[in-house]
Image (cartoon, rainbow, N blue to C red; front, side, top):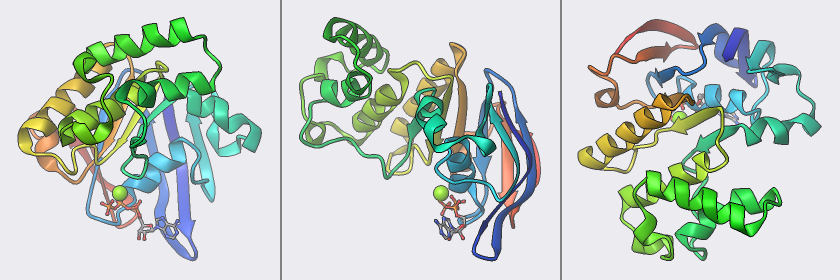
Length: 220
Ligand SMILES: Nc1ncnc2c1ncn2[C@@H]1O[C@H](COP(=O)(O)OP(=O)(O)OP(=O)(O)O)[C@@H](O)[C@H]1O
Ligand SMILES: [Mg+2]
Protein backbone atom coordinates (compact mmCIF):
# COMPACT_ATOMS: atom_id res chain seq x y z
CA UNK A 1 0.00 0.00 0.00
CA UNK A 2 2.80 2.43 0.94
CA UNK A 3 6.30 1.66 -0.25
CA UNK A 4 9.48 3.65 0.31
CA UNK A 5 12.37 2.36 -1.82
CA UNK A 6 15.76 3.88 -1.00
CA UNK A 7 14.25 7.26 -0.24
CA UNK A 8 16.53 10.17 0.56
CA UNK A 9 15.32 13.58 1.65
CA UNK A 10 17.70 16.47 2.19
CA UNK A 11 17.21 19.97 3.47
CA UNK A 12 20.16 21.86 2.08
CA UNK A 13 23.11 19.53 2.31
CA UNK A 14 21.81 17.68 5.31
CA UNK A 15 20.07 14.35 4.70
CA UNK A 16 17.11 14.02 7.05
CA UNK A 17 16.21 10.60 5.68
CA UNK A 18 19.03 8.69 4.06
CA UNK A 19 18.12 5.89 1.69
CA UNK A 20 15.32 4.41 3.76
CA UNK A 21 13.05 1.58 2.65
CA UNK A 22 9.71 0.70 4.21
CA UNK A 23 6.90 -1.56 3.09
CA UNK A 24 3.50 -0.92 4.64
CA UNK A 25 0.66 -3.26 3.79
CA UNK A 26 -2.94 -2.30 3.27
CA UNK A 27 -4.72 -2.39 6.61
CA UNK A 28 -1.59 -1.98 8.73
CA UNK A 29 -1.44 0.26 11.77
CA UNK A 30 2.09 1.41 12.27
CA UNK A 31 4.02 3.80 14.52
CA UNK A 32 6.94 5.98 13.48
CA UNK A 33 8.99 7.04 16.48
CA UNK A 34 12.41 8.41 17.35
CA UNK A 35 13.96 11.54 18.86
CA UNK A 36 13.06 15.09 17.92
CA UNK A 37 14.47 15.96 14.51
CA UNK A 38 14.73 12.32 13.42
CA UNK A 39 12.48 12.93 10.41
CA UNK A 40 9.09 11.55 11.53
CA UNK A 41 7.07 14.51 10.28
CA UNK A 42 9.12 14.67 7.08
CA UNK A 43 8.37 11.02 6.40
CA UNK A 44 4.62 11.63 6.66
CA UNK A 45 4.89 14.74 4.49
CA UNK A 46 6.61 12.74 1.76
CA UNK A 47 3.60 10.41 1.66
CA UNK A 48 1.11 13.18 0.88
CA UNK A 49 3.52 15.04 -1.35
CA UNK A 50 3.99 18.08 0.85
CA UNK A 51 7.72 17.34 0.59
CA UNK A 52 9.35 15.64 -2.39
CA UNK A 53 12.20 13.13 -2.11
CA UNK A 54 15.64 13.86 -3.54
CA UNK A 55 16.17 10.23 -4.46
CA UNK A 56 14.31 6.94 -4.39
CA UNK A 57 10.70 5.99 -5.04
CA UNK A 58 7.54 6.35 -3.01
CA UNK A 59 4.30 4.67 -3.99
CA UNK A 60 0.91 4.95 -2.28
CA UNK A 61 -1.65 2.47 -3.62
CA UNK A 62 -1.40 3.04 -7.39
CA UNK A 63 0.19 6.45 -7.19
CA UNK A 64 3.87 6.84 -7.91
CA UNK A 65 4.10 9.72 -5.46
CA UNK A 66 7.74 10.50 -6.15
CA UNK A 67 6.89 11.21 -9.80
CA UNK A 68 3.45 12.73 -9.33
CA UNK A 69 2.86 15.95 -11.25
CA UNK A 70 1.50 19.00 -9.44
CA UNK A 71 -1.85 18.28 -11.10
CA UNK A 72 -2.02 14.79 -9.66
CA UNK A 73 -1.55 15.88 -6.04
CA UNK A 74 -5.18 16.81 -5.17
CA UNK A 75 -6.42 13.37 -6.20
CA UNK A 76 -3.76 11.67 -4.09
CA UNK A 77 -4.69 13.86 -1.12
CA UNK A 78 -8.39 13.04 -1.42
CA UNK A 79 -7.38 9.51 -0.49
CA UNK A 80 -5.28 10.48 2.51
CA UNK A 81 -6.68 11.70 5.83
CA UNK A 82 -4.31 14.06 7.59
CA UNK A 83 -4.08 14.83 11.30
CA UNK A 84 -1.37 17.45 11.77
CA UNK A 85 -0.90 20.05 14.47
CA UNK A 86 -0.64 22.95 12.02
CA UNK A 87 -3.93 21.95 10.43
CA UNK A 88 -6.30 23.32 13.06
CA UNK A 89 -10.08 23.49 13.23
CA UNK A 90 -11.63 26.70 11.94
CA UNK A 91 -12.71 28.64 15.06
CA UNK A 92 -15.60 30.43 13.34
CA UNK A 93 -17.25 27.27 11.99
CA UNK A 94 -19.27 24.73 13.92
CA UNK A 95 -18.07 21.20 14.50
CA UNK A 96 -20.45 20.03 11.76
CA UNK A 97 -19.17 22.61 9.26
CA UNK A 98 -15.53 21.90 10.06
CA UNK A 99 -16.10 18.26 9.18
CA UNK A 100 -18.35 19.05 6.20
CA UNK A 101 -15.90 21.45 4.60
CA UNK A 102 -13.78 18.78 2.92
CA UNK A 103 -16.89 17.35 1.25
CA UNK A 104 -18.48 20.64 0.18
CA UNK A 105 -15.23 21.66 -1.51
CA UNK A 106 -15.68 18.59 -3.68
CA UNK A 107 -19.16 19.71 -4.66
CA UNK A 108 -21.16 16.96 -2.95
CA UNK A 109 -24.90 17.65 -2.51
CA UNK A 110 -26.04 18.82 0.96
CA UNK A 111 -28.14 15.73 1.73
CA UNK A 112 -25.21 13.43 1.13
CA UNK A 113 -22.88 15.70 3.10
CA UNK A 114 -25.24 15.57 6.09
CA UNK A 115 -25.35 11.79 5.89
CA UNK A 116 -21.57 11.34 5.81
CA UNK A 117 -20.84 14.00 8.45
CA UNK A 118 -23.41 12.57 10.85
CA UNK A 119 -22.06 9.08 10.30
CA UNK A 120 -18.51 10.09 11.20
CA UNK A 121 -19.57 12.31 14.14
CA UNK A 122 -21.50 9.32 15.46
CA UNK A 123 -18.33 7.27 15.22
CA UNK A 124 -16.27 9.75 17.26
CA UNK A 125 -19.22 10.17 19.67
CA UNK A 126 -19.73 13.89 19.08
CA UNK A 127 -23.21 14.07 17.59
CA UNK A 128 -24.38 16.14 20.55
CA UNK A 129 -21.68 18.76 19.88
CA UNK A 130 -22.28 19.12 16.14
CA UNK A 131 -23.59 22.68 16.36
CA UNK A 132 -21.00 24.05 18.78
CA UNK A 133 -17.93 26.05 17.87
CA UNK A 134 -14.59 24.31 18.56
CA UNK A 135 -13.70 26.62 21.48
CA UNK A 136 -16.53 25.08 23.52
CA UNK A 137 -15.07 21.59 23.24
CA UNK A 138 -12.40 20.01 25.42
CA UNK A 139 -8.97 19.27 23.94
CA UNK A 140 -9.82 15.58 23.53
CA UNK A 141 -13.13 16.40 21.86
CA UNK A 142 -11.44 18.84 19.49
CA UNK A 143 -8.96 16.18 18.49
CA UNK A 144 -11.86 13.79 17.78
CA UNK A 145 -13.34 16.44 15.47
CA UNK A 146 -9.98 16.62 13.69
CA UNK A 147 -10.11 12.84 13.26
CA UNK A 148 -13.70 13.02 12.01
CA UNK A 149 -12.65 15.64 9.47
CA UNK A 150 -9.82 13.42 8.29
CA UNK A 151 -12.10 10.38 8.01
CA UNK A 152 -15.20 11.88 6.40
CA UNK A 153 -13.97 11.40 2.86
CA UNK A 154 -13.24 7.73 3.61
CA UNK A 155 -9.51 7.85 2.88
CA UNK A 156 -7.41 4.76 2.18
CA UNK A 157 -4.69 6.04 4.49
CA UNK A 158 -4.75 8.05 7.70
CA UNK A 159 -1.61 9.98 8.69
CA UNK A 160 -1.38 11.35 12.22
CA UNK A 161 1.50 13.49 13.47
CA UNK A 162 1.77 13.59 17.29
CA UNK A 163 -2.00 13.17 17.52
CA UNK A 164 -2.03 13.01 21.32
CA UNK A 165 0.55 15.75 21.91
CA UNK A 166 -1.60 18.06 23.99
CA UNK A 167 -3.77 15.44 25.65
CA UNK A 168 -3.79 13.75 29.04
CA UNK A 169 -3.40 9.98 29.39
CA UNK A 170 -7.12 9.14 29.23
CA UNK A 171 -7.77 11.27 26.18
CA UNK A 172 -4.66 9.91 24.48
CA UNK A 173 -5.95 6.41 25.13
CA UNK A 174 -9.35 7.28 23.67
CA UNK A 175 -7.68 8.64 20.52
CA UNK A 176 -5.64 5.46 20.13
CA UNK A 177 -8.74 3.33 20.55
CA UNK A 178 -10.36 5.34 17.81
CA UNK A 179 -7.40 4.75 15.48
CA UNK A 180 -7.53 1.09 16.22
CA UNK A 181 -11.24 1.01 15.38
CA UNK A 182 -10.69 2.96 12.15
CA UNK A 183 -7.87 0.59 11.27
CA UNK A 184 -10.15 -2.37 12.02
CA UNK A 185 -12.40 -1.21 9.21
CA UNK A 186 -9.54 -1.42 6.72
CA UNK A 187 -7.89 2.02 6.71
CA UNK A 188 -4.11 1.96 6.80
CA UNK A 189 -3.00 4.14 9.75
CA UNK A 190 0.41 5.72 10.36
CA UNK A 191 1.06 7.49 13.64
CA UNK A 192 4.22 9.56 14.18
CA UNK A 193 4.89 10.06 17.88
CA UNK A 194 7.66 10.29 20.42
CA UNK A 195 5.27 9.02 23.10
CA UNK A 196 6.21 5.40 23.73
CA UNK A 197 3.23 4.77 25.96
CA UNK A 198 1.03 4.90 22.85
CA UNK A 199 2.53 1.76 21.39
CA UNK A 200 4.16 -0.14 24.24
CA UNK A 201 2.37 -3.43 24.63
CA UNK A 202 0.10 -2.65 21.66
CA UNK A 203 1.41 -5.41 19.40
CA UNK A 204 1.57 -2.91 16.52
CA UNK A 205 4.58 -2.44 14.27
CA UNK A 206 6.99 0.31 15.36
CA UNK A 207 9.67 1.94 13.19
CA UNK A 208 12.37 3.76 15.16
CA UNK A 209 14.10 6.54 13.23
CA UNK A 210 17.40 7.92 14.43
CA UNK A 211 20.23 9.75 12.77
CA UNK A 212 18.61 9.60 9.27
CA UNK A 213 18.09 5.84 9.35
CA UNK A 214 15.65 3.24 10.51
CA UNK A 215 17.61 2.19 13.54
CA UNK A 216 15.27 -0.60 14.50
CA UNK A 217 11.88 -2.06 13.85
CA UNK A 218 9.89 -4.04 16.36
CA UNK A 219 6.46 -4.93 17.69
CA UNK A 220 5.16 -2.55 20.35
N1 LIG B 1 11.21 22.71 5.44
C1 LIG B 1 12.37 22.46 6.08
N2 LIG B 1 13.47 23.16 5.80
C2 LIG B 1 14.64 22.91 6.41
N3 LIG B 1 14.81 21.94 7.33
C3 LIG B 1 13.74 21.22 7.67
C4 LIG B 1 12.46 21.43 7.07
N4 LIG B 1 11.58 20.55 7.60
C5 LIG B 1 12.28 19.83 8.49
N5 LIG B 1 13.57 20.21 8.53
C6 LIG B 1 14.62 19.61 9.37
O1 LIG B 1 14.59 18.23 9.19
C7 LIG B 1 14.81 17.53 10.41
C8 LIG B 1 13.68 16.55 10.66
O2 LIG B 1 12.50 17.28 10.93
P1 LIG B 1 11.13 16.58 11.30
O3 LIG B 1 10.16 17.66 11.54
O4 LIG B 1 10.80 15.58 10.25
O5 LIG B 1 11.52 15.82 12.64
P2 LIG B 1 10.59 15.05 13.68
O6 LIG B 1 11.17 13.68 13.86
O7 LIG B 1 9.18 15.15 13.24
O8 LIG B 1 10.83 15.88 15.03
P3 LIG B 1 9.81 16.24 16.23
O9 LIG B 1 9.76 15.02 17.13
O10 LIG B 1 10.47 17.38 16.93
O11 LIG B 1 8.49 16.59 15.64
C9 LIG B 1 14.98 18.60 11.46
O12 LIG B 1 16.36 18.78 11.68
C10 LIG B 1 14.37 19.83 10.84
O13 LIG B 1 14.97 21.00 11.30
MG1 LIG C 1 7.52 16.05 14.04
